[in-house]
Length: 205
Image (cartoon, rainbow, N blue to C red; front, side, top):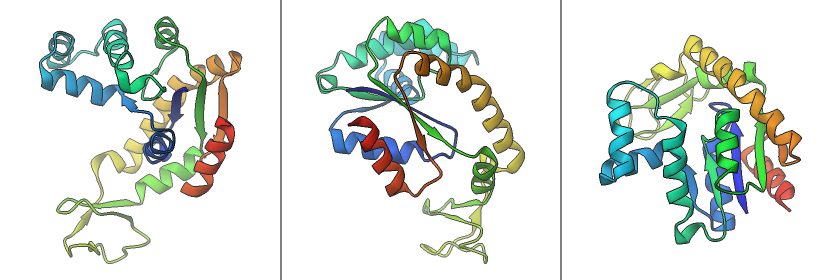
């Protein structure tokens, strides 16, 4: 089963991806992690990608596709895989279709306003990594280690709203793309983690 998971920043996509991969014993492939690993390992493709990143440029689609092709040809992908963070554009989706077959595209549907509220209320402890919300920690103190909780720069309201706007613009065409191919499964991402996971498993059956 070759899967794609789509969802706005803060939609719980990472959490659901981990649950799906554990249940179905398939690897979770994030293009960001893949790039970092190839750069760290000093592979030829990694060196090429690093040159673009060091110059502050986007890594070209054909290079990302080559990295993905290498990855999905590895033995642990024999039963399938879950792609996270790719494709992001119709051109990438076309290129992906040229190297593999996608069985299901899972789309976590969320209320972007509520998502912005949720992310803007997120508080993290830089010392131990504990994450909570402003509502659950009104004193601004970490329950785990007693250090001060902070709001990360990318959780600030204006940053969050911009990220969600960019996501919506970029991903809307992909939702149509996979829907037209009959591969899209929309999942209500505003439910609890357990309910979202149950809905995903029902859709995969």
